[in-house]
Image (cartoon, rainbow, N blue to C red):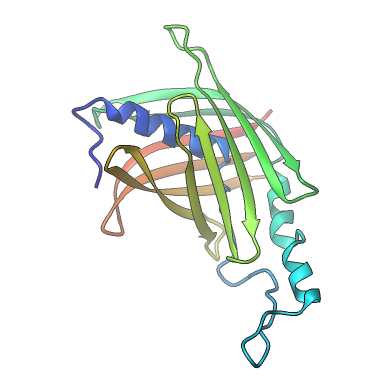
Length: 213
């Protein structure tokens, strides 16, 4: 498990995490635990699905339709912890989310409020649903690093989105994060995310409230 204190890497880790959660609107990876995109049936001889089924895999469906609620401009206000887990660092900004590629993906651009030193946190993400994997996914990159993070996950029966992914924020240093997202109404959703060790959420790293502008 990666360390998040003592070497200054906590800032990078949580910068990436903050951007990721904001950028994809927490829904980056939602799917019903009992609802999946129609998958092609394999032939009895174990061959490939026929052309009609393969074509269906290429098209957006009801899972992609769920992403439309994230289209718009959102005001984000929240906090994260960095090197000192007892101190909450505020993060505020605005994200613009648009549906692209004929209803297949949500593209996100996040711009943070200007910091006292004049710096601005910026990030971009892509949110979609993979018909083959039967999972939602999201990717994220920003101006606090040079890598990209990808996460996959599902939606619980009560509508809470739970996703998880790893990223290597320094050579050999890998962190696993779990993000949880809950829409309060059509114009408000709250995100929280946690450090994961051994499959357990051991520490909350932050929380964000997003309100439609």
